[in-house]
Amino acid sequence: MNVLITGGAGFIGSHLVEHFLANGDSVTALDNFSTGNGLNLKDSGLDAISGDIRDQKLVEKLTIESDLVLHMAAALGVSNIMNKTLESMSINIAGSEIVLNAAAKFNKRIIIASTSEIYGKNPKQPLNENDDRVIGNPQKIRWSYSDAKAIEEAMATSLFLEKKLRVTTIRFFNTVGPRQTGQYGMVLPRFIKAAISNEDLHVHGDGSQSRVFCHVKDAVSGLVSLVGDNDTFGEVYNVGGVGETSILELAKKVIERTESKSKIRLIPYDEVYGAGFEDMQRRVPDTSKIAAKTGWKASKTLDDIIDDVREYFISLAG
Ligand SMILES: NC(=O)c1ccc[n+]([C@@H]2O[C@H](COP(=O)([O-])OP(=O)(O)OC[C@H]3O[C@@H](n4cnc5c(N)ncnc54)[C@H](O)[C@@H]3O)[C@@H](O)[C@H]2O)c1
Image (cartoon, rainbow, N blue to C red; front, top):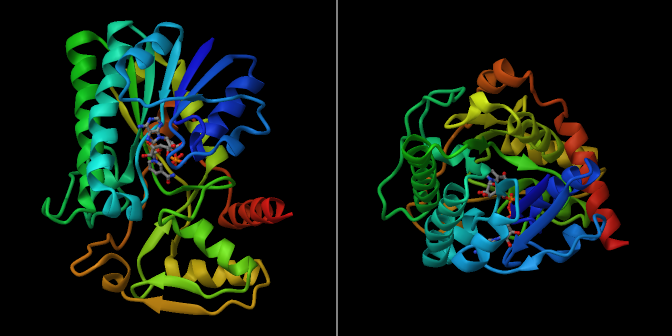
């Protein structure tokens, strides 16, 4: 197979590159290196094509040459969304429209990456694919990421219904692991990096908000399990880990597991993201739909994740 991976130099994208190369497929990665990094592809030996998913001519050319498109390119990370809002919306809406339309035009199989942010602050937990979106008002800029991804999902569904696009949507929940950067607000790499250097771990709010983390290797195998299944066209699947943990517990666990001397510092949300910032208290995935369809479920624990990310940062430093 020829596999085109948009955002292939990114965190999840680079792990997908490695998976498909190891499988004997031919892979093309397209990336503008905004949050991705050529170093992420060092082990794979692949050079990503430098370009933007909003370049329709380029995207169409690469799509024609592919059998499978994995659309991972996006602007993400709370701080990125808050600080570069217009550019983020443009990438996530206009860019995704170009990628989806190209796949429809040339009748290609495509998987798109959506997010648990889709559910917003819906208090019902765990969240299944049919649950409502509960979103704050559009002036609360954090929700623009969720809104853009919702538009992308709706475009995908409409292309499936109107043009028989062979699309499957995955809603990733807090995917973590080696190569994720903490630079754009992602909590786990931020904590581990700080712990390794014995610096304070900054917990936003009172730390009672909880998440369920999924190792990127599990996320990749979840995606891969859906690729060849024709019944998944037009469908949406949650892909997430097991074991809910509060962010305060996470900070304590990271310090303990990395044998760090770091202290925990609580920082009010307003101080980090400005007045009126809204977060969701819990976000627990119901993954029974994908489990029933393909038998997939996450296998890696939070300890596995912390160990792997710690090793990654240590190898970078060395
Ligand atoms: N990591 C998570 O926890 C998580 C959770 C939910 C959804 N997702 C989704 O998964 C996908 C991959 O995310 P990730 O965690 O690997 O993040 P990432 O930032 O590492 O990957 C995104 C990649 O897209 C590239 N990119 C951004 N704008 C581009 C553009 N205009 N043209 C070409 N390339 C561009 C970036 O340089 C980067 O390499 C995204 O669609 C994201 O929304 C991730």
